[in-house]
Length: 95
Image (cartoon, rainbow, N blue to C red; front, side, top):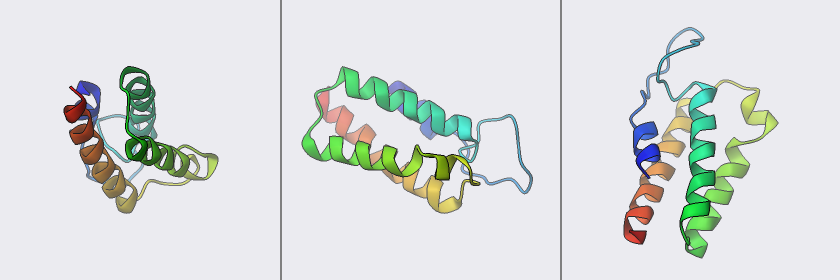
């Protein structure tokens, strides 16, 4: 859960130019870090059906060739932030 909270703190700013470093959620490495964290969460926690479904839906939407091939949008980061807020709260209930 700490990893998710750390990743949540990355910047929501969308720079005008393509960036290759820094903690920005528009960078694809942020999305890869979330993917790794979700894999860890699924192994460590006995998740409810709704939480499992939301994780699966998030993964289907954001971990595919179409998403990886296009620039990240504000709507993408907003949706990810909302999902992470939900997931972090659910995981707190599990502890």
